[in-house]
Structures are given as structure tokens and as C-alpha cells.
Image (cartoon, rainbow, N blue to C red; front, side):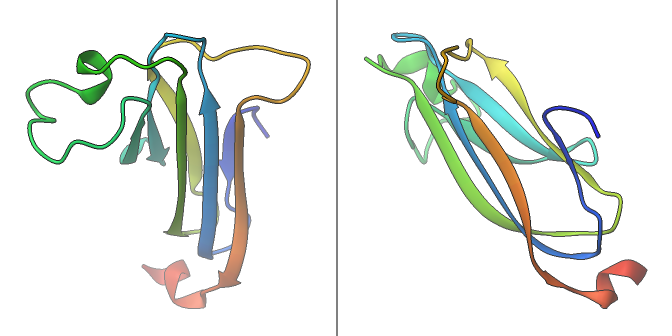
Length: 115
């Protein structure tokens, strides 16, 4: 087991959640990857439906505090790895846990074993 990497012990549907807390006035952008393939992106700049391919939100919007949050359900096969890769910014450090990443099996799915 590696810190920051979730490995699915069984095939099934998993709830994956993260709260990323950056330094004050520093933008945070991260990508959730499943077995080295990006599947979701979180950005502390907020949601902007148009123009993301030209200029990421984190570069264009000021932010007094940085917080990126996601929670999604993914189908995983046994042995699949999931991690959050920080693309921009720095995570804040404290005695309290400010950044959290977790995965939990919702239900097993034997059909995923053969996918």
C-alpha cells in the first residue's frame, strides 16, 4: 500500500472522495487518475463551462482561499489503483488533516472482473 494511492481489493462500484486544501491565495488544481488514466479534474477556481481548453479556471480567477472537492462513483476492477495528482498549487499543512482522499466499496460487481 502506498500513501495517496487507493487500490481496489475487489471488483465493484467505489465511492471516491477528496478535499484538497491549498495555501491561502494559492490556486489548486488536481486530476483523479484510475490506473494512470485521468478521469476527473478538480479546480479551486470554480466551474466555468466554456473555454476550459483555452485557459484553466485556476489561472483566471482570484480566490481568497483554495478548496477543491470532489466525490464520485467509479467502477473499478480488483487491483485498479486510484490517486489524486496535484497539477497546480501547494497543499496546506497543519496539525489537523486539511487534505483528505478516500475510497470505499459501495457494492461488489462480479461482471467487472471480466470487463
